[in-house]
Length: 217
Ligand SMILES: *Cc1c(COP(=O)(O)O)cnc(C)c1O
Image 1: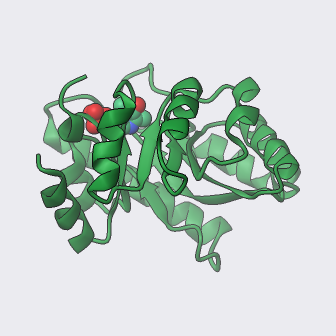
Image 2: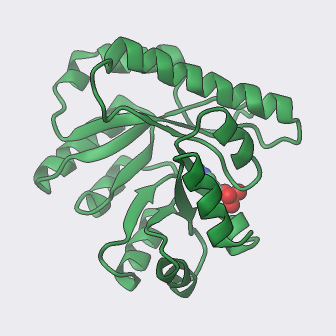
Image 3: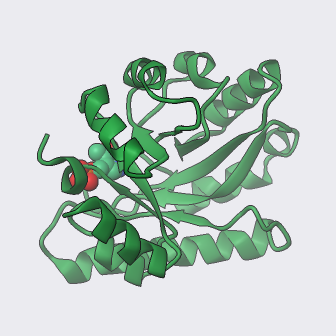
């Protein structure tokens, strides 16, 4: 799909685009940058570091894949948002490294909404335990901005829709219980190349799209 077409479709719905640039060479990112794209999503720290060096300073970097605690320090100085927080331990490490860098880092809680066993993420009980814990309440250098999830990799559109709908409900419940007056808690990161239209219909505020923009990996 043409970048401009996708961007205007999303803009009409107030949905932001994270261009998922994993495995793509820096030149391809620069093309999109010149067309106006600023938010790039990577799932590996090393790749993010290399591409950051190759792009102008006002590009924004979102970490969307599983993040190991020992890698947090490598990105804490610049990362704009971490979509894949799935434990208090990781959140505490992000807080610690953000404090050292004199920053506050925006984070999303990743939920396991798909049927597949292999995908990372919290369930609702785990998320509530995290949010209620005194250790979480002491963190001052992370800002929770919402939720993220991946639907099942399936042609069954009703299934995918029900999973996105579930994530939207989780978002509403958490917002009501823990962030009722916090305007920053507003993001639902869901939707990829194959299912972004359904995700947008179900309330996505941020889609993470790779192959539709860059071609097959
Ligand atoms: C790769 C990836 C995407 C984008 O996938 P496409 O199908 O290429 O759009 C989105 N989110 C995460 C977490 C990814 O790892």
